[in-house]
Amino acid sequence: MDKSFFKGVAKKVLKGENKERENLSIAFVVPAEMQKLNKKYRKKDKPTDVLSFEKVSHFKEEASEIIICPSVVREKAKDSKLSLKKELANVLIHGILHTLGYDHEISKIEEEKMFKKQEYYLSKVK
Image (cartoon, rainbow, N blue to C red; front, side, top):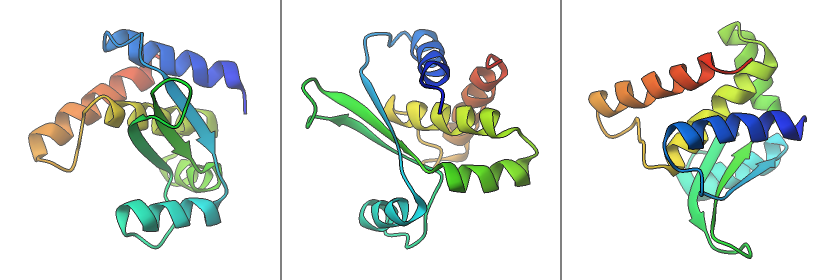
């Protein structure tokens, strides 16, 4: 995993949302670990591509946490016809937007708003 790539994507989103001072932690986990987390926090007993948590305070400084499962993302990339790199950026952007208060599960309007932002930021990824 290219740390600078993920940092660059995160910076673009945070800057675009006027949240440059936000702290983020990005972790990568295997499917078994993601399944445990997904079951614990979302009551879904299967691995998912990304989980996000707002303002976790077990760090030295308060930070939002994004957890990504590359194996699940790899499968999703095959289905979506995006490169693995683009799909990793896509799920990172998705997770960051959640930590900033966007929620596609609230309503159709909120879903459109969030996914429009997600597509915009993904279009900026090289």
